[in-house]
Length: 317
Image (cartoon, rainbow, N blue to C red; front, side):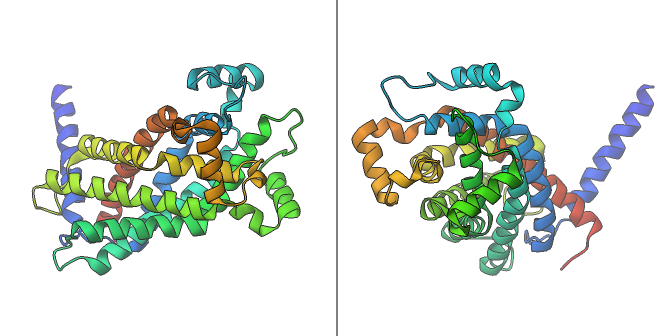
């Protein structure tokens, strides 16, 4: 039995080595493969982490008042499960899931496209160009997918807190939003969304790529393994949370059901500062930190592994 297990382990190791050896030696990746790998990774990730996204959004919408509805992340979970059951933590999942696949696909394919365009013959990018490639990936996903997706998600979650919820589901919710506000109604908070996603991906790709290069020791084709990929992604996620949570708070307020009380992004910033103080810009940091670290870690890990398989079965120049 031990010999059979040993042989099985050897076969697994050999397959992993063949996958790694099949990777493009220049470090450049085909955007078409990035679309497939990114889409699959994004869909799986959001199904695993959505409850923390729900809690983060609820805390950000729970504006400072004489008697706040929630005292913290755990209280938000308890109240939601008590009033709506465990499935209440997944309210708005459909809108985010439908958008997560194309969002991740656009993010990674755009990053690979920009990376390939700006890299040298060995596939290396300067730090400045890595930031630009990440920024371009974030801006692209913000405009094409994230803004309408996030607007619908926030409205769904906020609608649940009302005495008489009016949205009965994903399709009904979109129909009502478009009927009442037009297509522009799904693009509330576009500017802060661009700022958020652009800075998010610039920070994440920069930190992740820098850590990966360090661990590879100058060999772009070297597989650093799932453990170090996961750790590098987690660090990249944490860096983006501390770097742009204030932008995320403003974006969420601009997309909520009470967004009409803000005349602009700047007006939203001023009112939060005036009536709630500086700490309000970091509401939801704890649940967001937990979600984003795991989110980014698992996405990068899944993306790298799927890409290895694609490199092995799909030969490209």
